[in-house]
Image 1 (spheres, rainbow, N blue to C red):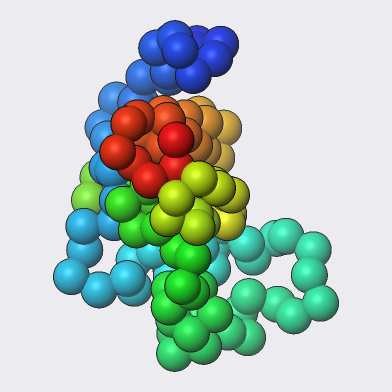
Image 2 (spheres, rainbow, N blue to C red; image 1 turned 90 degrees about the vertical axis):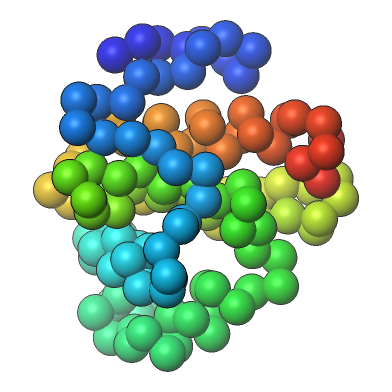
Length: 131
């Protein structure tokens, strides 16, 4: 895997059989919801992610006014969304990472770094609304 030190240098290469996508291109956000729930399952929290249903996830995450779907990046492996980096922006200058996660079965493959780097690199481009 290539090692990119900064945003000005080449980023990590996708693992064999995986690819990064500039944004979730699914007909519904359900694959992102499933990846998010799996990635957060072992994260310490007051409320377990298993307790959050799809409608609640949509309201809390997908319908946020600051969610930037163009800068949110996902990694697909064998047709399954396995990692993601959610971008939150003000649509003008500010960028914040909402969550970067990898499904538990796909950790240690460099996928979180891949999607985070791709999203941040796109956010720096002129016209992205965050430069």
